Length: 428
Image (cartoon, rainbow, N blue to C red; front, side, top):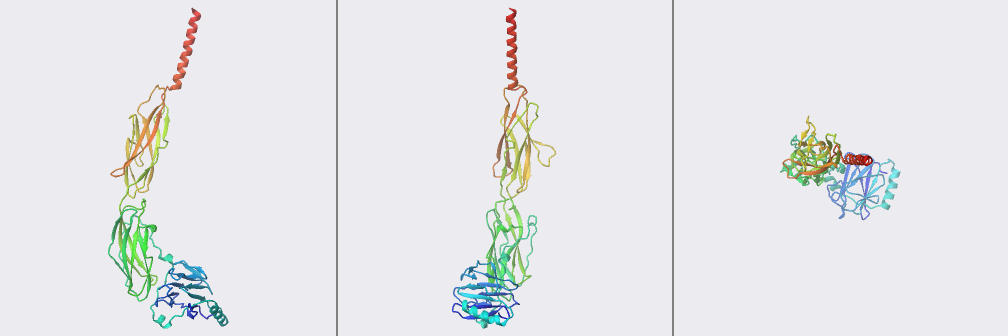
């Protein structure tokens, strides 16, 4: 093996070349562009094709694109994903083969390795003069580092961010404030300029009151030469859920580069989400109740949930078609029950179970059957375009003297009458 880790490059024609891995940089870039550490001059190779991270073992390799059908030891490589690569394993792309030769510090092994590789692989030579004159290429980071970074939500996003500037990361951004409805897209456009002395990779992420699943950044990163620029589009699509809280939210659009550690440019932005209204109510629980003559009233429960994204005042009212009962609502925070109607304020996603007492206004002493009251409880949002919603229930009130008592009395009366008539017949 070589006395230092190397890559053996074999081009489609079979020509061999060796590239010693530079431990001081830790990253080697391969592609058709002369800005790469290793130039693969082939029509089927992308300008920036493959990145080898050799900062620590096991080394890792990543294909930046599907161009050239990159594979590792015969297995296809998915773009923007790191794979471990070990001694004697090879990466194939666009007809080129790149073989990793790790240093085992024995000259004998080195000559044997060269013989085996020459018989089994293909590689491409690079012009060392051009490579030496080429600018330094960005160290491409793990795609997971390109994922949108979200600072944990703090309150309602009511603390504005400050702008931060960097000489190496220059950002142009025109629109700062965007208003959107839920299920719509709020968009910011940025232009990122490489103001540093090397070719570098840049990425954009959002910090502030934002859920990462709402955010899309296109492209996820850009490799830029010195002075070059790239356009990024950052969009936020709040869903129709209470978590998309209505109001003003302050965020920051942040641009960083792994090639300029500690450098960041930040632009303050404002997202305004318009309110929407929605709610859910459950059935009366229980839906039907029956009480005796001596029972004062019956208890029901009604669940109400605010499905909108803003605080809402709910108005609840009870009625029956005979005006024969009284409603009392036990509102949380109120010391006494509220008669006939009540108002309840709910936060987004908040749900309450509201106890309701229903009491008949009159009690019936005698009746052939129980008296049923048809109950209607209506819930709506004040000053809302959404109409109220109603649920139905039944309250049955049994008389003191009901059908069974009346029947028993009638039977008893009949028996008494029969006894009286029988006695009269015997007398006469």
